[in-house]
Image (cartoon, rainbow, N blue to C red):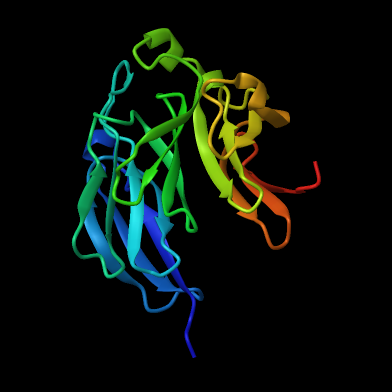
Length: 234
């Protein structure tokens, strides 16, 4: 009988975030038989996703912070399910600024992720090709835009059957200005009227989880230290 495995990303802790060393490890769903897969991650790893065929593990790296905010050094990497053959599919500081949560659209074989200080919802092929911006909330070259919490995209999920992308915009810390939004799966960069606000005035929504079979949307809220859920009958 096959057993359920968890794949866990540990960002690492340190007084200086530039020196934090992250890792990826796996264990059974009951917490036993833990073993390391990837170690020595120094670029603030954040989001993780595993392909349905268990061929690859993908993760985002936020990059390196500075006194003036996060530098443009974000990247996305992947490895085989056993932790071997680590490769970079979205190179550091070239195509995404501060990538956060990511998810896999299995049918179309696409990666979707939110780029926080990049203020974007993005996607690419599983090898990093065909990079697209689906939603853009500001100019990544504009320092004031990058500092605006209301523009920051963080959590993301995709419903391929319904043709929708969901994401969070966290707002200021515990500010009650967070939102959960959605738009058509092909994006709304050229037509903001396609963007639908599902929830607003949330403390500080972060990551999302979409249960299409049960028709539920779950999210974590950093401002409330809680997990919320809502039936998708909007």
